Structure formats: C-alpha cells, structure tokens
Image (tube, rainbow, N blue to C red; front, side, top):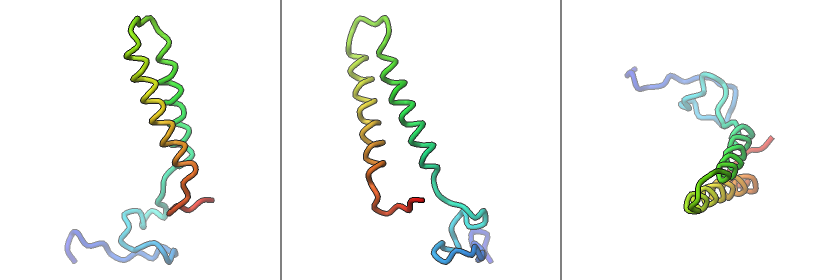
Length: 87
C-alpha cells in the first residue's frame, strides 16, 4: 500500500465514502450556527465602526457596503436548502 492510499474504515455510515478525510474521526460537517453568529457579529462590528471622528464618508461607504455584502450572504445561507442536511 502506498503512503497516499487510505485504508478502508468502517464508519457505520453507509453514505459517507471510506476515503473521506474525517471518516476516522466520525464527524464531518460545519458548525453552521457558529458561523452565523460570528457573521452577524462582524456585520454589527462593521456598522459600529462607522461611529468615529473621521470627516470623510468614503470609509462609511466601504464599511456599509462590506456589512451589506456579508449580511446578504448570511441571509442567502439561511434560506438556501439545496444540498444541505438540517437537524
């Protein structure tokens, strides 16, 4: 067996391929709620950064645009269900 070959692992899960990198650990997925909370935290953080002593509004435009783009992806991720498994 070459060093790049993965030996078959019985995970007890029929749909998970045996060569999945996390098959040995028994879990693979994403911490969806953690990513959502962190994303909304950064949206609020970007909007709160608009409060300050700067006189130009170019910074405000960039901060608001960045917050809107991040919020768009968070909302899109909330309502998209294609290809995901939900608990």
